[in-house]
Amino acid sequence: MAILHPFRAYRPTPEVAEEVACVPYDVINTAEARTLAVGNPLSFLHIIRPEINLPEGTDEHEDLVYETGAAKLSAWKSNPNTLQEESPSLYVYRLVMNGRAQTGIFGCVAVSDYDNGVILRHELTRPDKEDDRTRHILTQSAHAEPVMLTFRSDETVGEMMENTQRSEPIYDFVAPDGIAHTIWKMENPDQMVERFREIPLLYVADGHHRCKAASRAVEAVKPAAGAEINFFPAVLFPMDQMAILPYNRIVYKIPMMVTDFLAALKAFNLREDAAPVPEKKGDVSVLVNGKWYGITLPETKGISVADTLDVALLGEFVLEPLLQIKNPRTDKNINFVGGIRGTAELEKLVSEGTAQVAFSMYPTQIEELLAVSDAGLLMPPKSTWFEPKLRSGLLVHEF
Image (cartoon, rainbow, N blue to C red; front, side, top):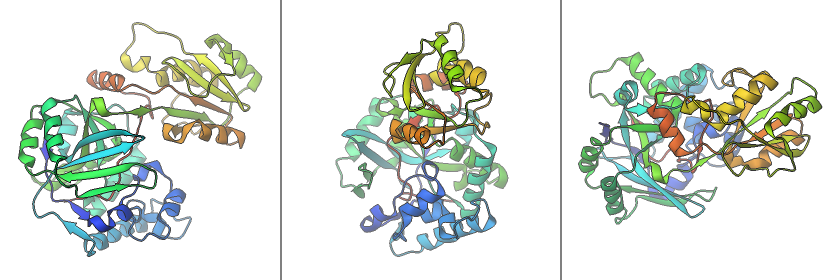
């Protein structure tokens, strides 16, 4: 049984919603956040990336950064362009990207469900990122950004969402990246709460560190039952509406001669002049010296579903034995490039000498994510990149 919790959201007035809404904190770095927020004092980036309000070079983990974020949120809540709902509410949130719509329920979910395995994860989290998000949550006394969850599609939930979309939305705008965001407020949230009591499991799609940080915040505070800190905001999408892009890899240095590396790849049916984007599971496109090659990963039997993922097989047969990358979570010689940036980003990084080799992956499938989660297993880091991304700053949960 999944707990869905209506909440009294802080939210911008419709007139300024487009100026406030911003990309999530973890899809951009500090420099990119500064650029996006230039000339826009209303951008929610000032709250979720508070270091952009401080001199360049400020460490994002300094005490002053967290204090600045809390002060910016407090000022935002008291701004005439910000309102708070009079009663706890749920919402329907629709995103449209390249003509494809994805619609889910925006509400709060329970930390207890995360701790007890009703909300299933599929990736390990990094302690340093956990520390950072936990501190932001506790300093701001708020969950400023929602996570993205998915669940097995339910006809009744779908009908309720459709009914809500017949009313006037509270927000309806197209963001600078061309993605349309529309949000409706539900008239009868209790009906949706009751229906989610019939949904057995929820799955983390995007926001593992925010989920873990919400749990750690509760552990630190040890609140009374029913306190708002026991819940954190999420948008819950039916799985048949989810789209996963590949999460590509770059390696900075090849620990052997490039010719020797290419010779070693012949064991994987090395092909020249391959397409930058692989066409099927098991195929990987490899960029070296400005040229795309194709390889095919070995087929394996009798191992867990997590070990059959392309990202796992790449690690087992290429990254570890050939490039000496044993732990991609901690190894400084590897980095990850979200599929939304495309293979052009890989070509740029290799051509400018930032990386010596790039791997363009076939995307993990949603069925694989659910199978791994259901089995209680974990994927390698950065196995999935979900698009479109939620916008931050539209509905904020205070505790």
